[in-house]
Image 1 (cartoon, rainbow, N blue to C red):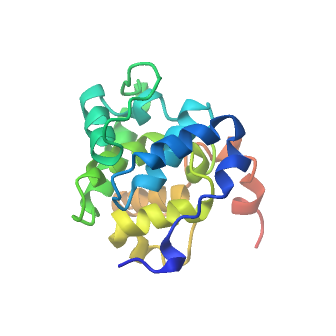
Image 2 (spheres, one colour; image 1 turned 120 degrees about the vertical axis):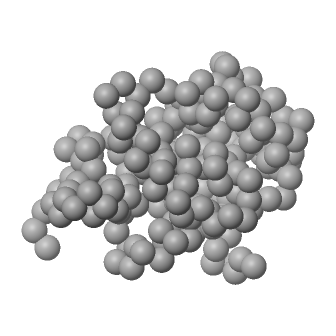
Length: 198
């Protein structure tokens, strides 16, 4: 059972995506009442508004995207191009490793965890903070997503490390590499905060 502190608040919707505030309301009006509805609505609003790195369909194959929409927003059809999986090129192996890590730590409570693993792995290919690349509206939204869907990873993140950096550190630890950073850190506006002197 979620406590009040674990729920996601909606008021930031209009401030972050003013042109898409109506879409958020429409999605939530059709929401199925499942735990990830609100987080997915935020990602969809951001993706449609060009505020995330996720391609149409959140990076899922068309059939998987339709399943996700039918499960969380039954009867709602997005006025967006056909969903498609991104072309990852040379980063395909990296994406596979991230997906494998996320799949290993699924909570096993909801069918959408598989889709969320794919979505999070795809967003990790972006160059900003993971919550921004996902199109979420605050870092706390991402922490909630991780706690709800990948609680084993949340339990391992005992120092509250930034999520993208934490996921890549897990991959590096598995490979026995102990100096590791996310591949897109150099272009991040907060590079100095993460890698500057303590």
